[in-house]
Length: 343
Image (cartoon, rainbow, N blue to C red):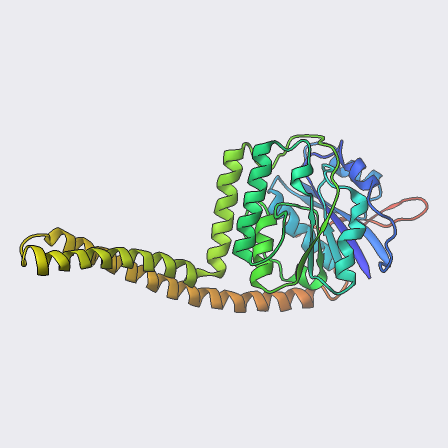
């Protein structure tokens, strides 16, 4: 059983050593524990620090592509290196590294495909009341969208079984946290959570510029992913609402036509009613077409899952998103660096 702990990093030369120091070296039920750093176009010495601290694999992206791209690049590289379990943590030392042991236990026991660390946001001292409220509200919305019970949806401290990792397809450019939970719920993956500890704040978040910016991007991501998986329900409800408004207006017209004016006037209501009913019907048809596309996407995702499974069964040379071989370290007494050859 092989565990790879992946760490997306962007200019984390100061905090990465602390993150690596706290990671467990031995876990019951795990035969190998390796580390993988995704360098998201860092301008500092993140890569050098990673090498000096014995990181096994380094994925170097050519420029800053964002957290979502870093996450999926790490997942892909970890799978190609034969990981049976993948743990994702942050390079800013936000999470207590020793809690990796707690994260992997439900997967080792065969009870979960994905395990998410619950930070218990109400107890985090450096979170403002507004941020705590928004975290709770966002997690509640994600639970409704995904039909899961995850209390901390934005936590990046999580573990994936190999099969769950193979099924993850992140399309958002902002963050993977919300999208992967909704995907897990819609794909009927077993999703669990454990309480984890957090460390003190070492730097400001680089994921978003402000709370309004974070809200806008998070809401957009949630709506987009939910509509991808539930297009008929989404467009059907919107279309039904619009059609109902039109039908209500038509009932009003009929009332005046039959009982008040005896056929005189209110033609504007009739036209408005027709417009609403036609638009509502068309939105419903859009939902049907989108549902057909969604079913086709499910078939495509299943094909992609099978292709990934075939590709990652062998010990392939890992590559970054530009097709370049990753830097690889093999631990020995001399800690000599081994670089994979291009194939």
